[in-house]
Image (cartoon, rainbow, N blue to C red; front, side):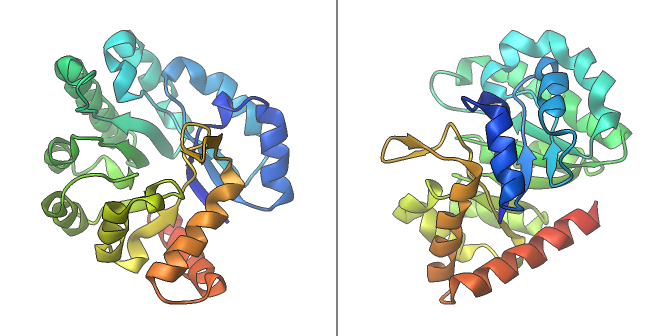
Length: 243
């Protein structure tokens, strides 16, 4: 199983989560929310080859942590993965748009200067703006939209830009999201948990709960879960090889 967006460092017992990931032979991208969290988060899983740690600065706290951009630049060459980064246009965060834009532009430029990264992107109520900015930084790397919630027009633009998409169990609880997933090419989709933030029935999701997303995708694709798993592993290998 593959979890391309999990907040392992924010789980109640990160070391136990890492052990369970290893026991299940999963592939997991452990995203961070601040550059200052990088060292500690990386150390949690540095001995586990199936877990990679991404360097991030979450848009919801960009205005509070913009001073950490030099730290971001310090660590950028230590990983092939960046996330969670992006923009958030929700009512409570849109007032910080200027800071969010400055942070994202800096990050994308830094990614380009470092040879390009696989980038896990947050784009809640800001998909169009994120795509516009990506167009200005073509060398930044490979964008992977985490829990995409933009409109159909935004989705078409993202697909045309060769973006990827990570889909989780909570996302597949929405009829609108399912309709969006149906439109995305099968070979651009990977699974995610977004745990422990994402929940189902009030329970925080763990990386291994991506199995629920595999089942959901198998229904959308009209195939057995085992076949859906094969598609996802093929996609994963393609994404990693393209870096």
